[in-house]
Amino acid sequence: METESFESSNVSAGLNLKKYLPLALMAVAVIIFAGLLWWLNKGGDGLLGGEARGMEGDPLDVALGFIEPWLTARQSADTDPFTLGLHNSIILSTEMSARLADYEDKLATGELDPVLCQTTVPEGLRTLPVFKQEAEAKILVMSSDKTAGGQALVTLASHNGLWEITDITCGSAESDPNQSEFTFDKEGQLLKNVPAPLNSQYWHLVFEEGGVFGHTAPLFLDGGSMCNKDGVESVCSESMLQEIAHVHVQGSMTEAGVQVKRIEFR
Image (cartoon, rainbow, N blue to C red; front, side, top):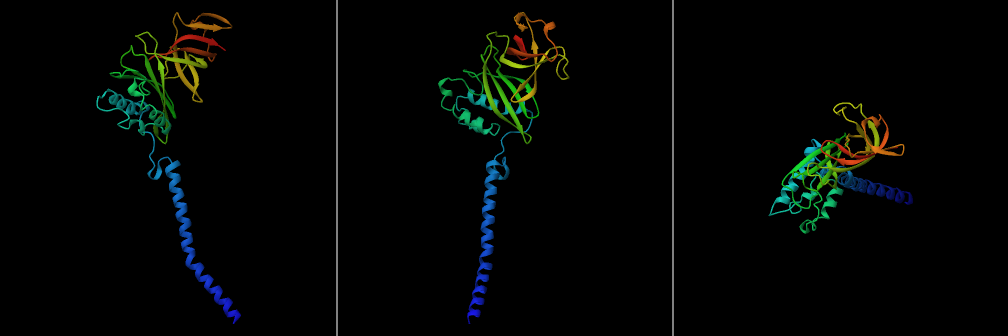
C-alpha cells in the first residue's frame, strides 16, 4: 500500500508539472519579450515604434529644414516656434531639444534667439558650410542683413544615414558691415599643397575639431595680420609660412575663410 501511495504521489506531481510548465515558460517568454520591447524603444534607435532622430540628405539642407521653419515662426504675429513644437523636431538630438525647451519663456523678453543667434528677427538667412566629414558637419548661419551682429554655428552629427543637429553655438560678428565673421581660435598645421577641392592658391590650417583631426580652413593675410616666430612679433608674410609648421591661429571666420589676426609658431 505504501508503494502504491508513493507511486500515486509521483504520478500526481508529474501531472502537475506537465500542467504548469507551459504556463511558466509562457510567463518567462512574456518577460523577455517585454524587456526586448523596452530596450528597442529606449536604446534601439527608433526600432519597433521608437522615433529615429535625424533626417536623410545633405547636412546643409537638413539644417535649413529646421532653421527656416523656426525663422518663419519667429516672423509670424500669430504663433511662435514653441507653440508649433519645433523645439521637439526630429532633426534635433534629444539633448538639443532639451536645451531649446529652456528658452520657451525667454524669447518674448527680447533675449538672444538660441537658433538664429539674433536679438531681432532677421528677414532672411545666409549660410556658409564650414566643413563636412562622414560623421560630422558644421554650418555657419547668418542674417541676410550684413550689419547684423550675430551668427550661429550649427553642428550636425550623422548616424545610420541620418543627420541631426547636436549643437548651435552663437557668436558675434565684427563691426565691419562688409564682412560676416566668426571668431576662430585653433592650433594645427600649415599646408599649402592641398588636394582638390581645396584651393592650393591659399595656405590652409589643418586642425582638430570634436576629437577629429583633419578639418581645414583657408587663411587670408593682410597688413593687420601679426606673426610671432622665434619670439619676434612682426607683420605676417607668406614667406614666413612653412609646410606642416605647428601654429596657433587667431582670427575671424568669414564667408571665404579665416581673416588672420595673429599666428604664433609653436
